[in-house]
Image (cartoon, rainbow, N blue to C red; front, side, top):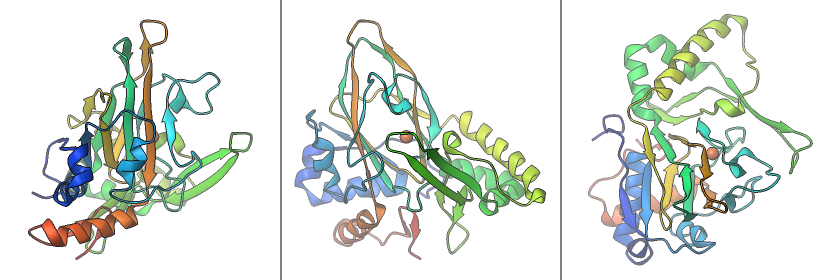
Amino acid sequence: MTRSDQEGHLPEVDYGEVMDYGEVLWRWLWNLNEYGMCLVNNVPTLPGSVIKVCKRIGRIQETLYGKVFELLVKDNPATIANTGEGLPLHMDLLYYKSPPGLSLLHCLRYDDSVIGGESLLLDCYPILEDLKNNYPEQFHTLTRVPATFQSIHHTGVPPTHFIRRVPHVVLGHHEEIVAVNWCPIAEGALQVSPVDVEPYYQAYLLLAKLFNTSERLLKFRLLPGQLISFNNRRILHGRNSFHSKERGGVRHFEGLFINVDESNSQFHLLNNKFGSEPPKYVFNHSVF
Ligand SMILES: [Fe+2]
């Protein structure tokens, strides 16, 4: 099976086995590499468990959100993440020069009284392969013309002034797709040659439509004790809006980011031991 021909698929592993057995740890990383995402079940619903899980496959990438961030409705929220608003499909922190490679989100509590809040995941790669086959010109434009990703909030907490300009689709040594940059909610003004403006927006709107109407979208309620892991440079994530039908209903996730480099190394090491063949790619790097 290649990266492009699988339907939306959410593989699963068990926390206890991930912590105890090298082969299941390899299976987790293999799933993350092959499908871009993997669920970890039966993670203790204790604050900080996400750090323990992270340590099995890499190191925390600290960001402006700190080492571990909370997704929980708060009074006077600093970000939309701490409200009950829905979040459209996006990738995180694309305005960094080194955006996080992997994301972990662990559900600590999700009361039955909370209506909505389903997690959304969409694998970009098969959609981009379709775009490449059916609209090669638009695909090429998205590999060439840089979009602007930014976070400029001088009075924010903390204050930020990040800008990064990069095309939406990143190709590897053999013209294969190795990473994606897609975050409409963090895009700034396009700064390109005038001749590229119209082709860019035509291609952009086409891809946005393909993403937003895809039947491959996974929608699910992450249950307490479940942790979803995914490749932040391949998988779009989002959530539906939510509210509690009773006073005090809580939806509480803890999350963190992982720099992908050490997970890359860990996967190679475990694959040498448990895999049947060397990988052709590891996360967002071609190795052939
Ligand atoms: Fe996000």
